[in-house]
Image (tube, rainbow, N blue to C red; front, side, top):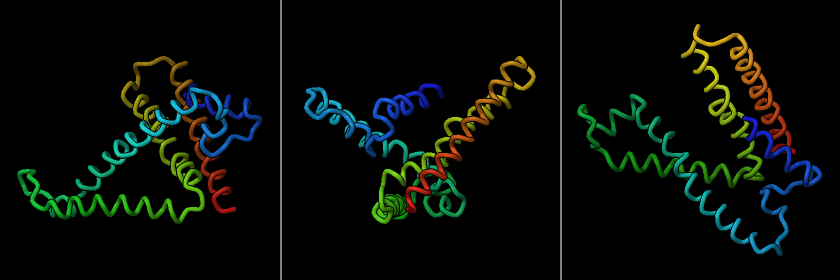
Length: 168
């Protein structure tokens, strides 16, 4: 949590509060390492988006009405066209949202602040508190709840800031 908050904070301070939408565009272009950094960013982005989409697709495919049409009782795939058609429609829906949104980066910021904040910070703290109930110290519980409240607050703040910038 500290690292996730520290990197953007240091970026804002060093760039005097005016970073580009993609942080790399704020770096000096004439630097030799700039091209390598951009190439590595492109590779990581192209690899990570499908990896992030895969769990969502699995959850959707396991919903009762969809699962019955894709898989038989033994879990074998029986309707490959529906399965990959559904996946294609979801990817097309994401691309369409990106095209409709004025700034895709603001759209990602909006989604990230309302979803990833909770799945990455709030949910783990809640699960930890639930799993280790009665086996942790009071200080650790207080720290966990402070972490929970602060990350949820930052997520809500980020959501409204992104929404405001997206609508203006």
